[in-house]
Every structure is written in structure tokens, then in C-alpha cells.
Image 1 (cartoon, rainbow, N blue to C red):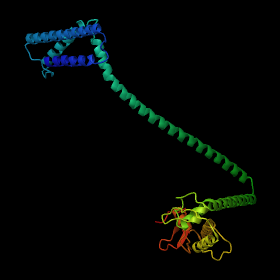
Image 2 (tube, one colour; image 1 turned 30 degrees about the vertical axis):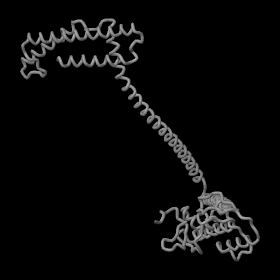
Image 3 (tube, rainbow, N blue to C red; image 1 turned 90 degrees about the vertical axis):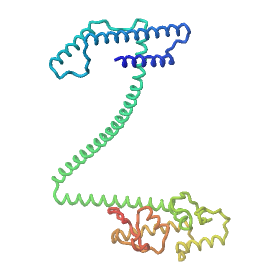
Image 4 (tube, rainbow, N blue to C red; image 1 turned 180 degrees about the horizontal axis):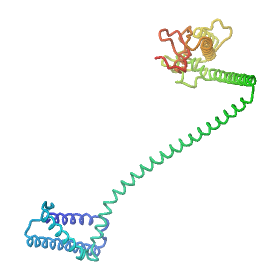
Length: 349
């Protein structure tokens, strides 16, 4: 018991020393002296109470003459005596005056500061945890709102489709088989015309993309320039000047008749257009080759299926681009054969 009291006094002294180093110490000398005197009075009061309690405890032990045990006795009579003693002690403490500090004592303020310093880190930790929970809750709420919106859209679409199907069933039930057949034929014809119109639109868009964007990049790769996609803006002047062995564009040289003839001869050698009577640029030759290759692939796929290969006359930038774009694939045992990928199946290894 004495060791516990001494430890309490030691802790109080340490705490008072810490408090003296904080902002709670008065700035003026007179206030500092008054504050020190209050601390000394509080310390003396607590020391006196500890000594009084220690003396009273020693006297009680001497009067009882028994060793105070910390565990209840196994004997019923001894256990009853222990309970009566504890009850008497609690009754005595209940009717005794509370040991409160004097009115001007700084002890309540010290205790309040200690509790505040203990609670501040805990409150900060709780606030941080609450912020994290709030963040996760808001994110979950946004996800649930998005899912609910999607569910409403799906439900509206299903209801609309159910209503439309019911109307179609009611309409068909009132028609003869010939009328139903005529309606189906008209519907198929309308759908066919729509598909043909969309196909023509897509073909025009593909040809425009090849002529305006892809052809120049294919021509650049064909004459030793960068791979398609590495250099997006390729001009006719860059194609005319050529590229170095590192794939960089050379400086543009002044053109003359001999250079133009050599350029056309090179185009004919690369794209095998010697039988053409019309002069073509690298861009035009590359565009023509890409269109011809795509057309051949589509025709063979429409006639014999996507599993049928065509035989390439040479390894071209157009065929390599289709391979990189996952539009076509080589034969696993013959790189001169090419076919369109069947997007309904898995890609071959």
C-alpha cells in the first residue's frame, strides 16, 4: 500500500513538472509565485492525506492482528466475516466527508488538463476512423445509386419490350397466316435494306480512313519508315524524301524529272504496279493495296467462310497491320496465307 501511495506522489510530481513547462504557467512574477504556492499547498495537502491514511491503515492492522488477504476464504464463516468487514468499510466511507481539495487548489485544473491530453489523441483517432467510414459509405452509396439507376433502366426496357410483344401477339392473332407471312417478308426486306445501307456507310468510312490516314502510314512503313501508329502525321514530302535505316525521316531534297522517274520506278518495284499506266504516289499505292487486300479477304470469307485462307504475293505493311490489329491471322504453318479472324471463336495460339 505504501509503495502504491509513493508511486502516486511520484507521478503527481512528474505531472506537475510537465504542467509547469506548458502554456498554463502565468507570465508575470507575482502570478508565478501565487501559482507555485498553490501547487506547494496542494502537494502538502495530498502528502498529509497519504500519511494520515497510511497511519490509519497501520493502526487498523495492529488492532485486527490478522493479515489482510486479497482472496475470499473458502470457509463459510470466515467468508461471512470478510463480507461484513467490507460492508462496514463501505458504510464508513459512505458517511464520511469527501476528501475534496480546497477551493483555490489547482488540482482540479491539473486533473482536467490530464484528462484532456489523454482524450485528444483518442478523439483524433476516432475522427480519422469516422472519416474513413464516411468515405467508404459515400462510395458504396454512389455505387448503389448507379446500380439502382441501371436496374430502373433495365426494368423500363423490359416493360417496354413486354408491352410491344403483347401488342404484336394481339395483332398477329387477328391476322390470317398469309397476312402474317407478308408482314414477315416486309420486315425482312426492310431489315435487309437497312443492313445494306449501313454496310455501304461503313465501307465509305473505311475507304475514307484508309485514303486520308492509314495509307500514308502504311507507305512509310513499306519504304523503311516507322511502324504504323508510331508516326501519325506522315506527309507526301516525307514519303518522297524517304527514311533512314533508323526509321527517321530524311531531309526533303529539291525534286526534278530524274528524281520523279526514280521515285515512280521504286513505287513500281515495291507495290508491283509496273503494268499500271497511271502514275501513282506511295500513298495511293498503299491505299490501293490495303483496299484490295480487305476486299479479297471479305469476298473469300463471304463465299467460303472465315476459315478459308488467301495466298499473299508478298509480305506487306498492309498484311502486318491487319495482324497487329487482330483483324486477320496467318496460317499457323504458312506465313504466306492469311484469313479474317472469326470473332465468334477464340483466337488461335
